[in-house]
Length: 320
Image 1 (cartoon, rainbow, N blue to C red):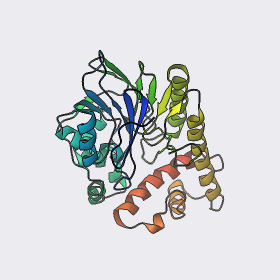
Image 2: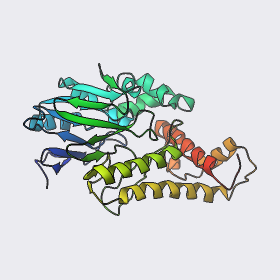
Image 3: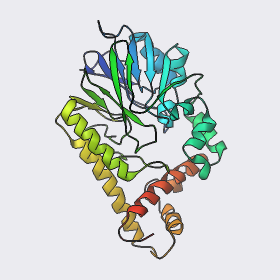
Image 4: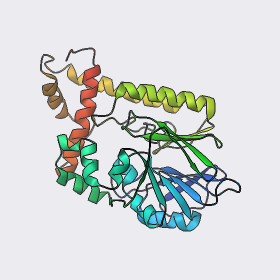
């Protein structure tokens, strides 16, 4: 059942008073993510609460006009597709909350740059251009909490779930009363059943494939035992007992491992790890870098470097 519609937004009821919001056409590669709006309900909350709805400013204003006023906004982590437009919520006098330490990334692009390790292989000027293309504007004030904390706004209880495989502060949301599990960017990115996406994202030093498998297992167990609905930052709504999202995420990681190992078979495996990675980077195993120029090429090269490195370190066909 669809609720009130706004141009360029898909608004879908999960329950009668909790909606999934999706921007249909983002302005750039990493500008937007899906999230939830908890509408007012007698005896629970008088004002709306936003969970991770990072959409363009004009759509934020339209959403607020229809479903506001909004009292609080909770961000799941500090990646660009989750922070680019939060400043617009702040301009509407909404209190912003984000998990520590990535809460600082919303207020300072330089901390974002260094915090995610872009400075190891990418110039700050590239990140400034990346931020400009995504229309990122720094927030003025962000309230931080620790990943895993339980948040309470009026009588709405939100349990934050620490899925640290994606980033050090990355969280999902569990609404126990409504039995909704939102796994944020854990890696379920199918726009519809049987479609395909990239899957789990681990293109930074801090990411961990081993931790991904643990987080996927944990999310699956929580969903099966306690939730009725599963949502994510880039997917459709799933109902219990459908566990296909978890199998999808595991399969995507395993497929990536095979892609790297198949490419390694054509190389001299006696080379040092860094030499192997540089050779694999030229093959565009994951991203079409040969079609890229400038800041995008540099950023995607960093992301692919870490993805390849993590799979090399798990490979059974070489010892590095």
